[in-house]
Length: 307
Image (cartoon, rainbow, N blue to C red):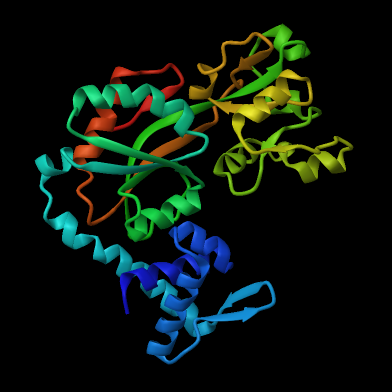
């Protein structure tokens, strides 16, 4: 049994597809299949049920994959125990971030991070929250910047900031012309453009008001026929007058155009909490302090920094 074989079964369990799992592991499909078959033969049981175009975990396979994740996480401890703070600052940090944070936060803080920690190299990856959690637990990433709520089992969670959400409207919209704070009821008759499933920001938007749900909108006769893959795609849709959306504060500064207007909510401001997650065995303090230091130097009106 090898760590590589354990990574193979974790990848197949995640993708439920041998081809995609092989691509994620950067190996050929025959190599991955041989490795998994070798592990199954060694263990004397089937981890996966294979059908025509379908892959499913067996009952014992699910327990084996769960334990494999634990083993992969613990395999990184040997390396991490050998690092002290000075060594860690001089080594590469594999940092992940979700799609709705990375393009707006990282360009601001990475130059600051280079100044405050010139010896630290940052290797960045964007992904969905669920995938980043898995990568941190397995040791593929050292840490990740995500938004709560999350399943934080076996992880250390350090709050970074609370970020306000704003309403994005076409500049010709009556509320945009009025320019005053918006109540959720004010926009209940507008199509709400959302990110697709898998994006946690979609859930943040829906949590602001049940009126924003596509099911509620459809029952009230509001057509909702577009879900974007990125905030930038949705922003262009708003500019075209196809609907409205919500945007996190940092995304506002990335839009110099005048065809979209951003307004705050009236009353209590909806926010999302952004946190840094790491394995409990990872010495997160050097990374955490450098990120917080960079955030303090790049303060933004829509952020409430947390200690």
